[in-house]
Amino acid sequence: MGIGAYSVAVGVAFLRLYNGRHWLNDVIAGAGVGILSARIGYWMLPLYQRWFKWDSPCSDIMVISPVYNPAEHSFSINLAYTF
Image (cartoon, rainbow, N blue to C red):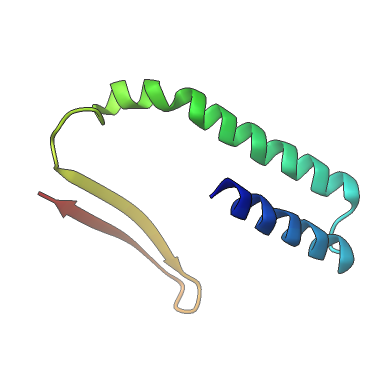
C-alpha cells in the first residue's frame, strides 16, 4: 500500500509542478509535512489505543462526522453506531 500511495503522491507533485500551481520548494515542504505527520501518527498509535481502549474485544463503534454541502449552504452532523 505504501508504494501505491507514494506513487500517487509523486504523480500529484509532478502535475502540480507541470501546471505551474506550485514551486519545487512547496512540493518538497508538503512531502516533508506529510511524511512527518504519518510518522507522528504511527508513534501515537499505542497511546491512542490505550486512551480509547481500541485493544478491548468490544464491538461497539460510534462515528460522528460533520458534513458541509456548499451547493445548498447547509451543515449536518451524521451519527453511526454499530453494536
